[in-house]
Length: 305
Image 1 (tube, rainbow, N blue to C red):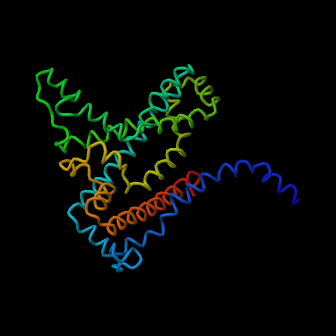
Image 2 (cartoon, helix red, strand yellow):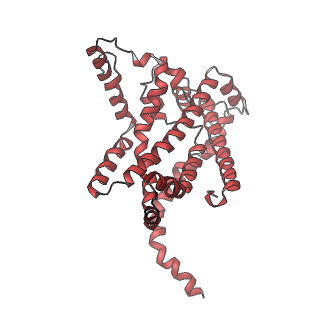
Image 3 (cartoon, rainbow, N blue to C red):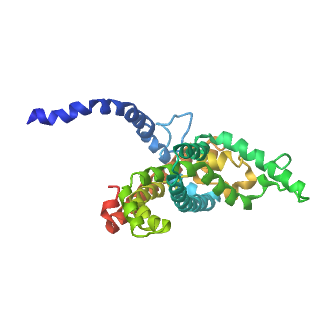
């Protein structure tokens, strides 16, 4: 009996070895900084050092939420993420279905590469691309408006337009990754289901509605739960690099992450920055548990844990 139990482990040891680099990175990057959470409860004094700095309890959290930017950054973070989740899911599924309908391998590889390319670009490069379009003096959009006899727009000093710009940039950059996840799930669906549907005279929309979407339910739920867990986080590059850190745009580009960075780098408020980060983590953890609990009650087979 002992030999038969050891055989699967002996066969799988190469996979365990392959896991080691990822586990080491996870421990160092994700769990290594966790002891630093206590900084959120201290008023850091560089002369005394972190460990000897005075303990202030929840004062950093109180100060964080008493600031004028507290409501703006929380509102922006939540609302933007809700829009990203809804549009990212709907468009990701739509593009994934369209990619799965391509029959020629060359076409599939070409469109996969084109649509995934923005996801592989750094936010710094994306910021330069955005500036090439939005610059008041030399931007492509303003040059086009001038050619039509219209007045140029000062994009980097007009907060109202950036709610749409940020959503479009986020979709442009992330849709490739999301759609490929959904496409890989669609490819794994049993083809006999579609063949039986065609025999019964089902249209393409009926195939999507009655076969594809139900088979995508588990993937949709899993990705949605993961995104809900990060609803109090924002993509720092999107909200800091793309607007070029323009102070005029803070009402629409200020999120918790950008505020934490500015509080740390510009105001040197380490304790308040740590408090904001801890607040994000705790709320995100609670949101994941709550979302998964709801899913487990409604559809136990689709719950993550």
